[in-house]
Amino acid sequence: MFRHIKRDRQLLLLFIPCIVFFALFRYGPMYGLIIAFKNYDVWSGITGSEWVGLEHFRTFFSSPDFFKLFKNTILLGFYTLLIGFPFPIIFAILLNEVRILWFKKSIQTVSFLPSFLSIVIVSSMLIDFLSPSSGIINDIIAALGFEKIYFLVEPSWFRTVYIGSDIWQLMGYESILYLAAIAGISPDLYEAAKVDGATRWDRIRYITLPGLMPTILILFIIKAGNMFRIGFEKILLIYNPMTYEVADVFSTYVYRQGLLQANYSYAAAVGLFEGIIALVMLLIANLLSRRLGGKSLW
Image (cartoon, rainbow, N blue to C red; front, side, top):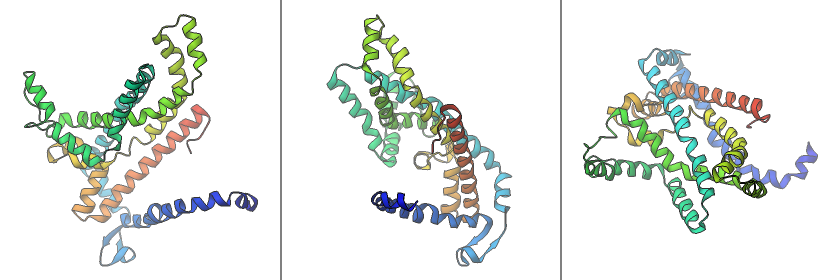
């Protein structure tokens, strides 16, 4: 062991800032999870607050909000995975088939740009584009002779807007992995198939897609494992009380309960439950990857 440490001492030295970061900002704050089992009082502190055990968990599980939050979180994660996952694959394959280099580079650059925008900017663009009074989307709808739609107020449209904006923002960035996988496929296979009379569709079907399959499988399992962890930033910026019924997820509920209503212990209990479920799903995804691919994700 000491021999390996001496051999890799320079790499380990470079790794120290990473260890310090995770110790201070990831594992250190986990001590605060103990307030999920207490009636936390700011003046008494964590150690001085009254211990109540699983009371906050029982309150949450018996609340009507529990089933609504669980359903919304699962549905948003599932729809994002089901609808959003194929788009980067299709885009990478189509982009790989473009033979005009300047056009290919231009499309690639434009598709990458949204991933560099912050969530705040993306949400502001959504609000502007979908505005019923001055939004370009509603202007087009009105020009076609239809009535304008209140996208961000009508609950039936929220999931469509959320998933569509997610695809628009991440499709170009996520396609990089698939483009790299395609680049690793031997050009000789394409040349041989072309000589044998295979059409472009045949080359995609029998060479490109099988070559992408290991990458697709691993990324799908990883995304399925993270399906329960939905970032609250975009939802927080575009939802409103009119869409709570379909938009409210665990993370936004924790934000409202903890920061806005100062129910710190109750919010910690909800957040801990969400984290445990997300961890279980990651473990299941890791188990599936080992069964299917023979390798652990970790």
